[in-house]
Length: 230
Image (cartoon, rainbow, N blue to C red):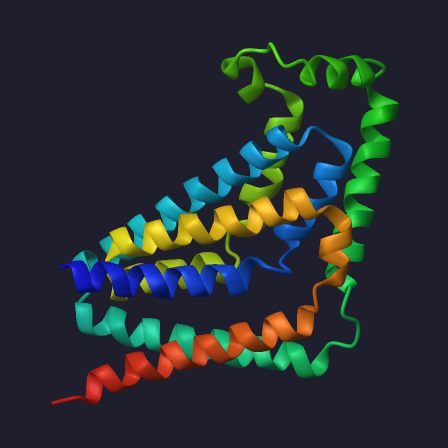
């Protein structure tokens, strides 16, 4: 039991870190943290990622109970190999390294301009958010927290890392997958929020994608070999 939890934990941690660093939600957290209170951005992004990780693990845990375990294992193997090849294809066929950062920054700039035009009370909201004596309940209801949560949650929905978490939870211990995923998300999101754009702009998307692609392929090969072992 302990061994399976540790194995699921380490696989999930490695996969999450390599999938999330340089991801759109990573850049979004970094840019939002420059414009809004960091604690609200961090709590909003991290809450969304924790919810997404738990939901994905639950789906992966339920899959073998609805479909045969052998079939889910084969699907997981194909999923890892497919994502690995997909990541490697992106590395060798995409030109610019900072395309995602520029894309996310442009989108957030457009949202910011729209919000300024639509609301004259935006500055008042920001001033209220910065007060340290606000209650926890009001923090969770603040526009900044909700914005960080929604951008991260819907940005991750259907993403490669979410599908990989589902596949991993179907093949490994779900508890280990959840714990590893949450720790990985916490490390990446904290780094993005504290490092800001300067850190985000220094990350080589190609190196991260290459490392993630190799890791997915290794997981896929390991999963395939486990099916042919006597």
